[in-house]
Amino acid sequence: MPSSTQNPMPDSPITFVLFTFNEEKRVAWAIQNFLQFGRILVVDNFSTDRTVEIAKSFGCDVLLNQNQGWVEDAATTAKVKAAVQTDWIYWASADEMIDGPSMQRILHAIRSGKYNIVNIARKNYYYGVFCHNAFVDRMNRIFKKDAIDFTGNTIHNFGRVAVPKKTICFLDSHKYYVHHFISNTSKSYLHVMDRYTDTEPEMPVESLPRTRLCARMAKVFVRNYCFGGAYKAGFPGLFLVLNTMYYRALTRMKQYERKHGLNVEAILVRNDPERTALLESCRAAASDAP
Image (cartoon, rainbow, N blue to C red; front, side, top):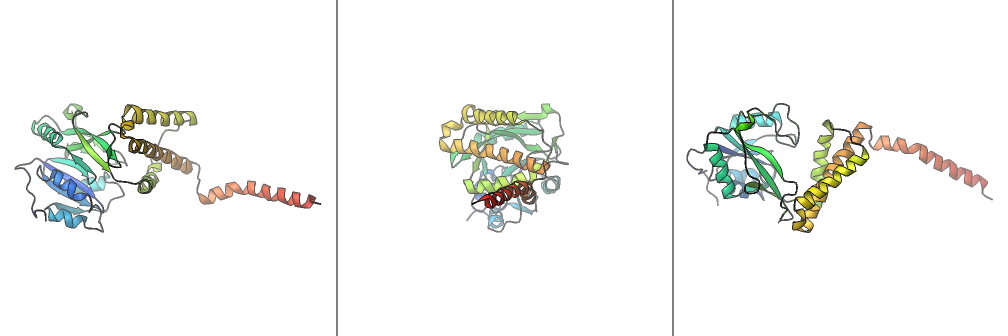
């Protein structure tokens, strides 16, 4: 049984904010990863499993918050900032962990007094295999509370930087990065993609000719599978690239459907003239039959 009280390093300047929903199988890993470095605030989307119970057993503070399916919206971030007592926030998920040297480098940057934000890369594991730099991303996930403005923020964005760029510490992605443990199967990934892409078509996006769209998708494959090193991970690396490409394609499909008013009923109506013509051809053939 874990300790019932948090025991972070003395005078820690940072609170680790951990977002959860039904994460009973993963949340203890993330909590133990951060526990000795600072306070932990678990922001839970009303889980129906033991997530909150596990968090409390480690002495974590818990904030129950109904989000919109993503956690960087203005309402959620305002609640988080109000609940955090330290100057610094680390924005975390239950499927992520960080190694010791990276944590030391983050704390060194914070204590230097030079920075308002620490920007760090995130690298992916798929089917339990490290996929190198395939779809590596960077995020201002460690920041002073007033350094990022989330007003009007949209899905897959992380607010507006409200401090000079020179006060952002960009950590070397070759040495320091967040480990992202994707646990989706192909079936569960499809569910996630469908849910996220239901939101993304609402966002304005550039209109691309078909040839440029195809070229862009090919570029995504080459950049992540070849140059990003996903090929080193074998089939898991290949499947990560293909799934992520499908995610982007699905976003475009839904945007096209929305733009042209395409739903099941509209498609049925569009098919009616062709079906009518087929019936008429059959009637004509029947009347001409000997």
